[in-house]
Length: 431
Image 1 (cartoon, rainbow, N blue to C red):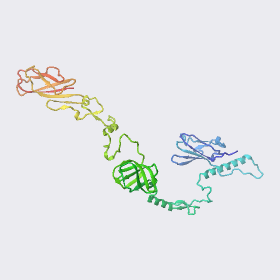
Image 2 (image 1 turned 90 degrees about the vertical axis):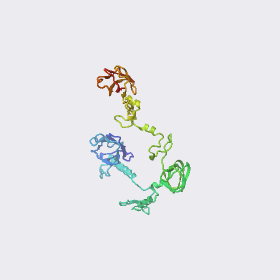
Image 3 (image 1 turned 135 degrees about the horizontal axis):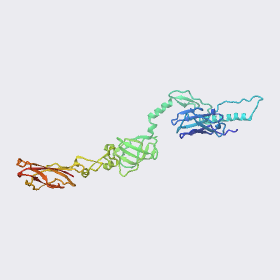
């Protein structure tokens, strides 16, 4: 039968999990097929029929091709993703029939042998096309590679009709690189042209010729310690003359020690101007407080971060969960008649007073240094006197009524004689 034109080559990239792979050319037996598996790192493995795959009988002698079945033993989950499966026709260069003198001469047998020769020719063309070859108009009739020699390159000989090993061209390439005519030197230059840093617009430097500068390319010319900068777009490079339309400058002064190289495109301008300098430690931000506010993370029981100091009112309320209390939050008066306000609202007050009356039942009034806002839990009294101690040892001060928010009333009871002097010390708590 006729043999379709086909190079006997097909390649499939796996997506993962494949259990069958198609091929699009005819084979007579499974041995006529070669299967390669290439990993993402380009490691090539030749798969073995019966171990890695099998060819079903329906895929033999079919001009349209067939499939291979991937072995579940070798690949339980199918082929891995990202691999390349290459199927190649791989007919042996042999003849299996022998026509005898006066013997049978069957068309089917002849066609089979002719088909096989055609496929072998297709395989040969495929492999030749994938090999290095001379142009069709070359007068060289044969070409042989020289024997390998370490450290040498294969080059054309001086007669331009054969190949030879040589180390001369490698040395020339190294010399050229050392001389600065290749590599990064093609995109860098120096100049002693005296120009001022300040000012935008067109500026021209005298530089080395033969550089790879192109129109529209962005270059940076820097001087001194690299902080004096002119940057912009190349508008002309002819011979040793380089013209740049400067749109960004930094620094000041006139300089003649320029280093010129490729620069990246500048980002879109923001609302402000200028660059951040490491030496300024962020002091050049428009508002360090606003910037810090933007990046800070609140502290919590599970996160390290920033916590704000509580106001006096917040400290006294004692309800904020995201504020820190510091000593200044403790409102206080540490005089002899004073107080302290604790977080949560508790107020402790103390004082000393000279009674206005030592007579039993006569009202004396304590005025607190600061008023309680809600309640006074109690006032505690203690009298100190240096007179009539013996006759008044049973006399005790007492509160005449529940203590108020700003004052408390008290008196002596009982007494058989009056105090002539003394000081009443008191202590109160509330909120």
